[in-house]
Every structure is written in C-alpha cells, then in structure tokens.
Length: 528
Image (tube, rainbow, N blue to C red):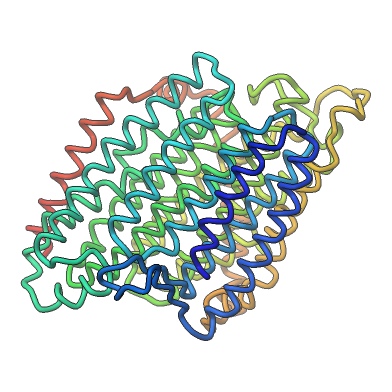
C-alpha cells in the first residue's frame, strides 16, 4: 500500500506527459493532487496509532525493500502532498506545459519514497534522482543563468552524495545489511569508534544538503536563481531541503551511540548568524528569502541537538512552520516580481495597495518567520528556547533579532509608492488563493500551536502564560531595536554591500566539503 505514494505520482506524471491538451493536464493535475493529499492524510491517521510496514516482494525486511510509515514519516508525506497541492493551485493558470507537470509529479513521488524508505541504499537512489529532477526544473527556461545555477547545484550535490554512498558502503561492510533497523541491532553490539568514519561521511553529505556553514554556497544559486519557476523555488526552500533535515533526524537515531550534539549546536548557531547577515546584505527579494532559509535551518539544527524534549519538539514543529511561511513568501515574491517586473527591493513599493491579498499573505508569513506573537513561528521558537540553556537561548534571540531586522527591510516593499491603477489581468485568482491559504495557516499554526503539535506528533505540550508574555515583551523590544539598527546602520552600511557580493564557486564548495569532513572527524576524536 505504501509504495503507491511513490508509484502513483510517477504514473500520473507519465499520463500528464502523454495527454496533449494543456487545460486537461492542469485539471487532471489538480484533481489527482487532491486525491494524493487525501490519501496522505488517511495514512497519517493510520500511522498515529500503529506503524505501517510494507514489504515489497514478500521478502524478509533485511533482503527486500521495506517501506515504513510512522508518525514522523507520515507527517512529512502529508506535508509533501499538501505543498504540492498548493503549488498546483498556484500554477493552474500558468503557461507551463506537460514537461513541467511531468517533472513536478516525478519529484513528488521521489520525495515520498525517501520519507517512507527504511533502506540506506534506496534513500541514496531517491535523493540522487530527486537532485537530477530539481536540476532540470531549475533549468526549465534554459537561459544562461539558470543553466549555470542548475549545473552547479547538480554537480555539488552529486559530489556530496558520494560521501553518503561511501558511508553506507562502509556500514554494509561492517554489518552485512542495509536495512536501518537490522543494521542498528548489529551496531549496538560493536564498538562505537568503528563507525566514526561512516558517520563523518554520511553527516558531511547530509550537512551540505542542509546548507550548514560552510556548505551553504550552492543554496542561494539554487533557491534564488532568476528564471526558475516560482513554484520550484518555493518547494526547494519550503520542502526539498527538509529531506536533508529528515535524514539528519533518522541518522541521529541510527547513530545513537555517537553523540555530536555540541558540535552541531555550534554549527547551527554559526549557520543562523551567517544566514541573516547574508540576507541583510542582499537587494534581490528572492536572495533575501534564500539566505533566510539558511538562517532558519541553523535554528532547526540547533533545536534538534538540544537534549530536551520540548526543544526537539519545537524544532520539528519549526520544520512544518518553516515550510508554510517560506513557501508563502517565495510564492508571493513570484507574484510581486511578475507584477512589478523587478526583484530589486529598492524598486518595489506599495504592494499592499496594488496587491492587497498578496500583501496580506506576505505580512502573515513575515510575522510567522520573525516569531511574532500568535503566529506559528512564535510557538515553535518558544518551545525551542524553553529547553535551551542561557547561552543557547541568547544566541537564538540574537538570530531572531537579525531575522526581524532583515524583514523590516523586506517589508518596505509593502508600503509607500504612487497610487497606481490595477490591471485585473495581472492578479490571478488561483495564485492569490494559494498564498492566502499558506498565510492563514501561519496564523492558525500559532493560535492553535499546542493542539497542532498534539495532533501531528501525539505529544502533549503546554505554553506557560507568564513565559509567553515574557516572549511578547522580548519580541516588542527586538522590533524596536531592529528598527533602530535598520534605519541607522543597515541602510548606510558599506560593509554589508561588500558582504552581499560574496559568491562561492564550485571549487570552493568542494573544498568546503573536505574541510567539514575533517572537522567532523576531529570533533569525533575530541568530544567522544
């Protein structure tokens, strides 16, 4: 049964490619995606009570291909189906042909397969083929810039995944199996030092796909490339990068005898700071959002390594929240770019007047990502901080301050501007519907945050009224400080302009991979 979540999108992709009528393709894509989303919700409810296991070919789990749907994987499958439904709605009136829809549905099937797979090699296959599909979608319009960015993305991810392949090859040599559960049982009986090398290899590959410092150079090229379809950029930032986070969570459990949480907390903090500093230095709205993906991934990585149940729960919930507000921001940015004909933040003004629904969705997404009270980011960040120590909490507060400053800058596109007549043809109803859905979820994800966490993960959490009031005061102070810093420093800073021109080439990315691998090996020797 579970294999259908990987197989059906592929079958639908082939059917959509065969059908010659574009309008039929779009209607069929929407109808089928609604069915896939409903099915994923059904599997989610089943998985809440009991893990679902499918052995393909009736082989034993060690020999055959085993798919598992537990609480975590079912949430990710449902998230995937929902976000693809949103982008199908968003692109319903676009001029993209059958090639576009073919690759989009193939991509969805690969992501579902990755989330459900319990075989180390099958994970490699799913994520590697998905990388190729994403590269093709990035280069869809075939202009020079997107071709270059797409090839860089493909090559550096291909290099990184070789680290993963060597790592699982080493595990297979030591254990004789590739099934995660079977390998874990064998590994528990062996010396943990035996697995230092495969751990370093696998975590280096995953860390590049997470875009951790210093392995983030590919992300702004991929997420911010000028001519990639907007929906592709939104899914890359809102969903695809979560594949790496998902793998990190799985391998945390897999390598439970190896604890490098201190190392990854440090990397998460540095990543958070680098992300918002680079975002502050940009003038391209798409690049601002791309670099903030790096910053938010830093917070998530930090949270997943704090030894506290509330913080980890907050980190996982922040993955869901980030998918919502970052997808909304990218989709809104795509509409704004098309209406204004530019992505320069200094040339866009009056979005709220010209595109009120898009402006409203942008505001709700901004309030979500900055952790404003009553919005989804505030709840996840509240739980992350609640279990962190004083130093880590201070770092999270500073990273969030940087996020607030950056989005004060970003929000200048919403106001001002001359009064303009609105061309009704430039405002697509389906697009506005899609971004409004995501914006509203950002609000309800905060209002009903505790209920959402219980519903998604079967975990009971509680928000302390006094603690949350303290967070509201802290947010208000951060906004005030952020505005002062933006007005009297950011707008005039020559240093930020120089930082904004930084771009890592392919050789630099490869060198960073080697450096990170060595750092992980050193950390293993020093910290364990």
